[in-house]
Image 1 (cartoon, rainbow, N blue to C red):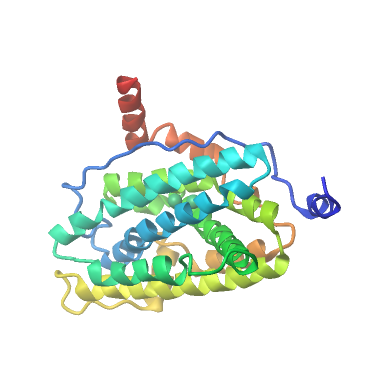
Image 2 (cartoon, rainbow, N blue to C red; image 1 turned 90 degrees about the horizontal axis):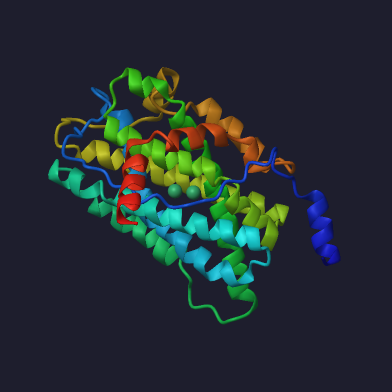
Length: 308
Ligand SMILES: [Fe+2]
Ligand SMILES: [Fe+2]
């Protein structure tokens, strides 16, 4: 081990407990015919705020996979390499599963193409490979994107933990298929929440880069999310005057159908703390328990066994 690596290993926070699980992609599929447009009954705003996931994740998670495939040759730790390969498999499946909701939205009169075209541009062009010469600049851009993914994964784990515990959605009679999609995905986000951060620490770990890329990721997420919610509200064919506001967001947080602004604000200093490790967030035990009972994950397992 080099001196630099030794210095890092002394500073890099360790996971809270030995929580390592073998990451595998579950080949789920969902039938959307029965899912109503407002799958949280009588709450188009909360429905559409969560629906933004279906717009951001297909392109976003495809981008994760694209970047991670390029980084594989630089990973010197075999366990981490196996985790990254498992992560790639899970994210590819997440991207596909959310993408498959879009035709259902179109059938209900809500065509998201004008918005998804912008999201595609954001991930494929703005955050794409660029035509950089091999060497320093290309490596810098790759590390920058690795750090961005670590910051985004802080939020996917946050949201995963939230949705696994959002009992108010059950009380409101939210559509069970949509809840299973969100909780299957959320549980896998909690399950693999340490991978992106550990990869970032393994390759670079610069605290300045962590702060800078968190700022970028957070700003982009807030910008894209509020824009996506407004897009859905304005284009929902069942709403006469569909609008979105931060006030409604805060209200729904208080009601328990969206994350609270306070919980989101408190998650910021946690990520920026030098002692941060993603294992401090959420519960692997809860995630694994959900995956053991998720209708879609169980059906995928049965199909796999049947094919074997
Ligand atoms: Fe994901
Ligand atoms: Fe993830």
